[in-house]
Length: 497
Image (cartoon, rainbow, N blue to C red; front, side):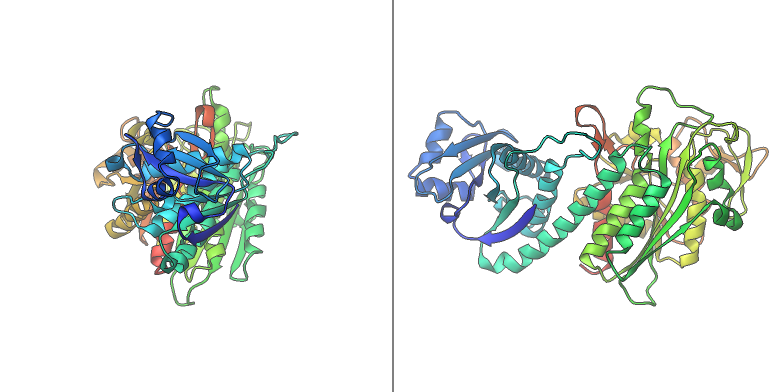
């Protein structure tokens, strides 16, 4: 999709289609009023007949609108004007993109970007319009023998701005939005691929492809022998039941000064999670291919960073493995030694994410990081607590937590902080090792983060539990690409953007 920015009166735009917002109770947006005046009340007459009540996401296509140079006009419902917010804006933009793609309008001028949203500016509107449009048009068809092609797909979208003074600013917003959308699409593709294709080796190859896009990037991939030499007994304990070899993937991007400490992103990369010996129920087990969405979000974010050439140093670390039952698989009650030297009694092999992350977090200390953020589909308890709207956030450094929360609000990819109090640590006490890998039924998301905190005492660290936001279930089943927008926004702030 090609996005451009343009100013000018909407009725004078030559296009296959002009997209206008309409609120409930026949209230026209400013661009729609301009077109209505040029058409001598044509738009208002359509609304008075009740053809478009104006509810969020409703669409109505008009042909031969007088006084307008565009071939067609697409009216999009935006809900009540006083209640128009980020959610309704995204709903309207997405509805317009899907409708245009289905009607054969290969290009269009979208005036929804000029609608005022409380607390947001034009830059946000433009960037979010790009992201929402790309998200609406995303299709995963890599594994289909016959791809259902759109007859005339939407190929170009012109985003409207009020004046020529906004053009340079608008183009910067579009560039950011396009890069974020590309990162999200990569994360979606990786998440949606089945476990027999997206293996640890596949993730490593993807990282190598990204590194080839920039001279500032390089990849290091450690095999199981190298991890064994480093003492990564926790990570390797998860891989014991799989025939797919585990990998520790490091993708470094050095866009900032050499003396600047990097931000390290650590992504859980369990490419399929059966639960191991603690076998999961069969229902919906296919969704455990999404257990590497943390890794996918790290690669997606780094794709965005590379495309934007941000002046910042970022390191992505991905511990990648499968978790399967086998004669050599780790058993409940086994004790392993992590890279940090701490011993872990494994009471449940389905609590494997924290086992691979703890060694990766210890490894992250080698980079003397400014901050470390791990991203993981870690606990079902987070889904119960926060649903599919917000990621769980826990941190050992309050300012870092606030930066991430603010980045999530700015990017409309929100997180919610949970406490990381020492009171919860006692749930991890073991009679036989330094700790056990589960803390019981209560506060499962928090005790999982408490476990990880024992390996992050030497640096600023935050944990994002994305179990509820990484993929959708039901009719729209598939990876979401979150939290690429949140992570990118955090890095944009760090880079001074």
